[in-house]
Length: 390
Image (cartoon, rainbow, N blue to C red; front, side):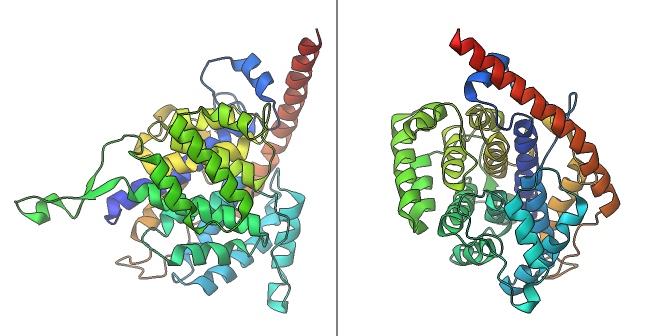
């Protein structure tokens, strides 16, 4: 993925894929798998947050905060950590809907980072950094052995738990490995300048998902994640469905909002259905529970692997989130197409322009819609439980 056009397509894929995946799942957050099956049966999932349109939530917004900081990092680790902490310190002022208490406390501590305050939290269950890790797998493509070091150091800005650091490193390596596997060298007898240094592989599933999983898991340091990887490997070899793996892990009706099960099941949904963006995202969301982050991770992995052009156009058209809508995300991908060795802005690309006032307006508009969705979920789950008792 060295050519500029290829890089742009895959960066757009991971940005749009994450946003769309979360937008599909955020309206179903907390819904049980049984209730979801009763409401939608086998019909395709659609946006439910707004009529015929969807809006992403906290996981995509935090990924965009990290992307903006990366543009201003000179491609160096310490400047990125400072830029990320500075942006996070201002993030709560936009009144983000759905921000976790742990993330809010971390953002507040970032404001005092220069005074020596340690910002990262030891809460190992939070999933806030997962989508950031998937994006880094594409943005830092070609970093080689530097990628795990980047992930361990940057994840520690907000999450110091070994489980969080291990899961984020795994996700970034998985994304990087999957994207690399899509390309092959072109050997022709003609003019190499006409053929180009790299040729695009067809839109097809991973040829060997087990090998990709094994390579991504080489740096796993915690026993819990290694056990999950072993279950995923067995499932891929036996061609288990995503729902069967969830049952094997003990999550029959819903997946908790914890980093390890979310990482394992969203990654498995991508590996199992890597050739179809919608199918990978739907299989992850239909597990129930933490549907927003499951959809965001699976969507980011599938979009980053397939590229932005492979995402269904109707899903892209229905995505909302201004001032950071679909056009803004494509402009961000255009900036990263040249980063960090751009012709005009070597190593230092200007961050994408934003509108703080419109961000506040957007978040305030989402507040009543979030309340309506919560009431719907309580009603759907309650109806399902009452029918089970009968």
